[in-house]
Length: 231
Image (cartoon, rainbow, N blue to C red; front, side):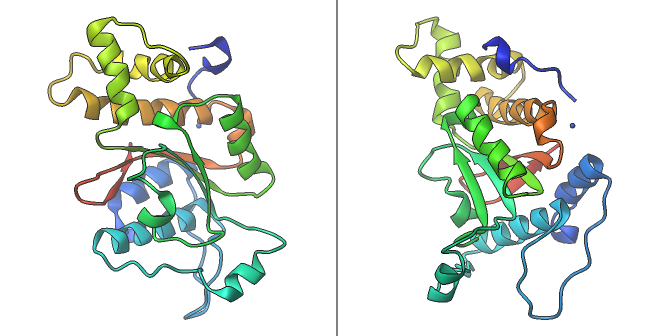
């Protein structure tokens, strides 16, 4: 991994206890008071943002998606400005579109997608844009089950065969997490998915430009459709 990315590691209500616990430990802040009954408003805190994401994911997993914010009025409202409530760093995998699996609509999420959630300067700049310019209070690093980029990194470690072209950058970034999980019992790829998401989370937490936001890591299960916050 290039020296520029080697930084020291620092920083649903009852929908999911694990998610709420992880967020509370990261922010130490309580959820803001809800708006009027029936009102639709942008989540303004990391707690509210996480609750909205996890509730949307519950609807997605149960095949009860609402597909919000897709009408003509929404498009008109967003024609001149945007106010997404969360930034999601996720994989480019075609099975993991954040807006769908969190059941969010136009203008709700700022999504940055790169194979294996790998960071580079363009990705970091995009995430910084979300925090500084759009003031999203939450960054969620989302790994997923059976990630092909993770599988490629593990294949390289197993065989020692060099990876050609730009794919080498992916393997180089994911390799440390894969190597750290090599002796754990169970599925090597799945262990690495979680370890790499945590590693990217910790890299962002360590960077001062992201400190205005809460940074969390999560894993998406392709079989169940559920997202789990990683501790």
